[in-house]
View 1 (cartoon, rainbow, N blue to C red):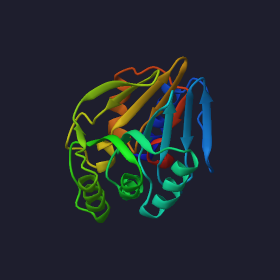
View 2: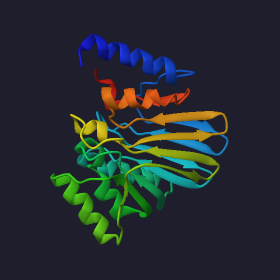
View 3: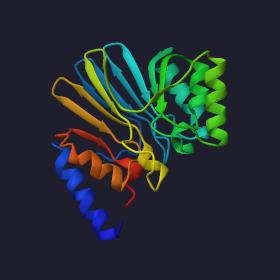
Length: 215
């Protein structure tokens, strides 16, 4: 896609989704609501987000391999010994790298991942940690909704398997809690975002900009 068209797509995405503000975070940041806490960890050019809702927890991605120890330390600081859900949006090393350390450090109720595999060191470490924990990841191939405390979570798998780039295979996650709404877009790029906007998803208060804001 040409650069001009990419810019237009980003402008449409922002206008369609953001009711309040797009947030760029350089450090650990928390967004509070009644019973809701969303923490974006500073893991460099990678993703790791912790959602806490009424005592239930979901981690979205786990940064790079070198971020794993810091993520585990943060969980210990928060007194978290169990994650109800670990969502791996896709298998790039900046999203899955620390997952094996998280799986070894805390109990995880359910792991959700895309419906596929990847031949990489980080993916092999992740699957080995899953086996050691006695877990089998659920491979998402459609759309699923579930409750996280009083929050509602909607996960959207990729609509196709033949995108030009792996980033468009990312699981996208919508979170709603009362009047607050969040969109965590993984690394979805042009084609996937265009497909998503065709569904008229409405607006969100918070957008985790896909692929680190890269055009």
